[in-house]
Picture 1 (cartoon, helix red, strand yellow):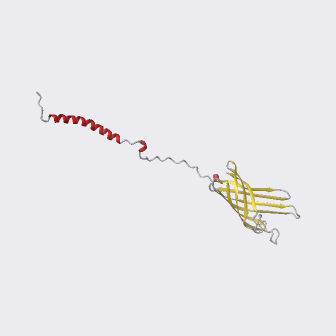
Picture 2: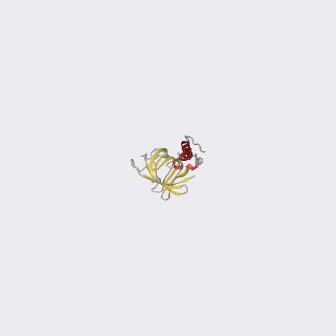
Length: 216
């Protein structure tokens, strides 16, 4: 004998709903869990580990230094010798300053009587190189203090000092590893008749120089 409760049909329906509810609950939980996955390209940026900075080369005074200057020689009826070495310090790739001694010897055999004189002193030079693509060209300023014969003095063999500021421009051409040749044109601004570059009052004749610069 089977006895049915008045709730029998409802009980079966309830049991069926429970059987359907369990898989639905599991499916919902799986969907919810899966929805939490984020694609790698959508992830917020993660702080990167700081890379160690490459070790910097220690400062070396010699790496910033070079030796250069001008040398002029002429022998014959007129003998002309100029020795003007420079010790240069390269502040950076664009600015160079230099100091050095200056010596000039001049001898003229004709007309009679013979004449000869020596000029000596020191000079300071500053060069400012132009940015690329004109980095081989530079502007130059120079200041010389020279001991010269005083041809206007009534005394024999009298000498005096003269200051000679000069400005101009030049060109530097690589000639090897840390070696350059230079050529420049300068103008004497002193307008002093005692200057070895003097030609005539208020006449600024160009002075051409050539030299070499070798890194230490």
